[in-house]
Image (cartoon, rainbow, N blue to C red; front, side, top):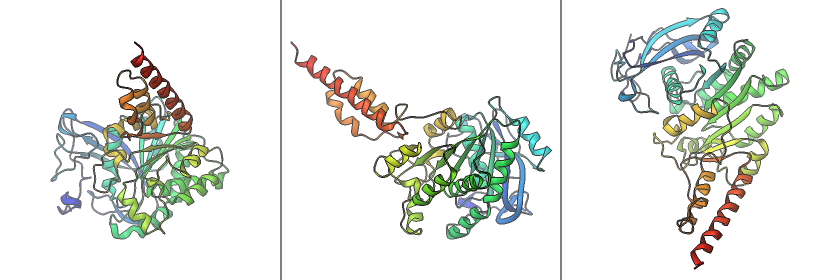
Length: 397
């Protein structure tokens, strides 16, 4: 039943329950999937397509903080997993749509009544998607009822087109899930977060909902797209189809994302949304006009060779996710990034003149929000006044 040759040497079958340990934490997920079931209880679902949506409750144990690094999934080296040092499945329970799913929502709903729905990206096995989302929920500290929508991916770099068609295949099912969540009286607000190719599926489902219903469900307030594998021209049309009453969009981009470089080459050499430079035209003006906040992670060191998963692997970013973005709060360039750097320089005294070049230095996270130009101009103006004051005091006897 359980083979030992897995992805990167990992054992296959990690979804067989292995229990938890003293000091460990647990994350209780609702998993919605269009994948075909597997006969292996340690795999649960394959990369093939199922005719309808399935729901499963999965509880995963995360080892104590002293035995793990934030931003990383501690995969079992062998089975059963060691819950003191590795992620471990605690329980798996199939749920029926309706009363059982509503019962899970009611039990897991925090006081703020916010639901976070995550859609994974290209080249993901079922357990890859589940464990990565568990890590994001735990490390971000997000106060949400966590749901993951996982679509049929064959988890092979040679099956890019199959995976892309699987996202199209899953649009109706994701729209159905969003409708169910929006109509549930226990749900107050919904944040959608998607990674890579999952961004295409997410935006398409929202576009389809807007066209079908005349609007996007009002409870869907925020959409976070991390490293979105989306044609920039197509994204502009998708936004237009959503109408003016669309959710607030936040993008995580990185110009050194090698996975998106490959995607661009096989997609007609059109810019991918997750690889744009938000500080240059025409993107800067277009983003400001659309009211889209962009977090540029280019200067941030990635944890993988492709620089495609920075949003989940950086402790600073996952905490920003949990503290601000998932909760629907605004993050502006004056909170972190360029505004903070210029502000710090402007506050200096003796070091101000010598630090003038700091304005041009990239910070690990650069924020471009709809008010960026106004904030930036104000910071530069104050910086200029600080320079004048410092020079004046330096030459005054």
